[in-house]
Image (cartoon, rainbow, N blue to C red; front, side, top):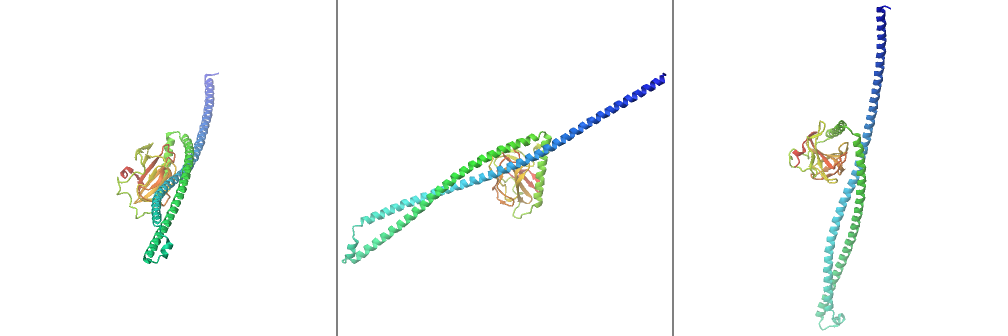
Length: 376
């Protein structure tokens, strides 16, 4: 065989080998691509499942928060009823003391009248009537006895009225004491119920946090929550009707009180997560403490919002609104008129907060402004 023939054979053999290798590489690449696609699809399904579970857990968190809110509102009502009942009992005790004093005075007056009648009781009415020697004296004595009798009967009647009033006051005191006892028992039941609900809420919150693993996922969650809040406020702004009697907050800088007594944990404009910054302030507060309106206004929104829990928004006029979030319970409804310093909610940790507090915003024409410019 010639050299040329050998070279030709070698070339064809190399070509066949290269073709076979290329085909194998292509098959391997396609196989790898299929595996990658399969993993991508698996990840998508896992992500969809996680998103679905997150939505279910958020819905459960909302349900838990609303149950706690309902019980907290009942507890607040029971607490006020207790205060009213204690005030009533105090008033009844004062009333009882006044009646006891009147009773002692009447007893003393009746005693004096009886002693006076006894001391002058040596006269015989029959003798006086038969005594014709001094008819004027008889008439005067009879008139005196008549006055004495009338005074005694009036005193007895007044004494009977006092005794009746005193008896009524004592009965009402017993009723109020029984009512107070029932209210205390009711409050203990409500306290036990809210503790169970809070434990359930903690379990739900733990499940939610376990589904948010990376900082990117946390950022996405916060972005969605902020977007939801902005959309809600924009909707409120669009529906807002200017009220002439509300003049806004422009003339009240550094004059308003904070909505709760507590320190600021996160300040306006500071970093929240990633590029997100706080649009308001997060204030520490004791669970169940009063959240008060910073100024007169009308309630525009009172409901649960994802990430912010139970939220109440108040219109102060001239484009000014204040927002209060993470409440345990809302005490006002949409359309209610509120006055400066009036209780509008109870502080809590709804919306997924680990620690109790209140999220507070002030907005002017939809844009957030630093609350420190207005509150001191």
